[in-house]
Length: 97
Image (cartoon, rainbow, N blue to C red):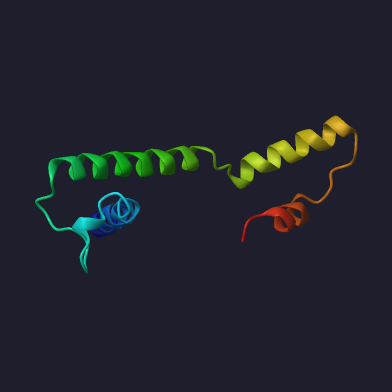
C-alpha cells in the first residue's frame, strides 16, 4: 500500500510538471527539472498538485455504486408505473467500459 501511494504521488508530480512546461520551459532541458526548484516554480507545482488531488477527490465523490443505481432504477420504474425492467441489462448497456 505504501509503495502504491509513493507511485501515485510521483505520477501526480510528473503530471503537474508536464502542465508547467509551457510556463517554465527554460527549466526543462532534456529531463524534468531537479530539486531544489526555484521558489516560484515550487509554488506553481504545488498549486497544480493540489488542484489534481482536489479534482480526483471531487470525481471520486460523484461515483455511484451499482446499489445506488439499482435503487434509482427501481424508483424510476415505480414512478412511471411500469413493471420492473431488467436492471442488469440496463446496467450492462450503459456502464462505462
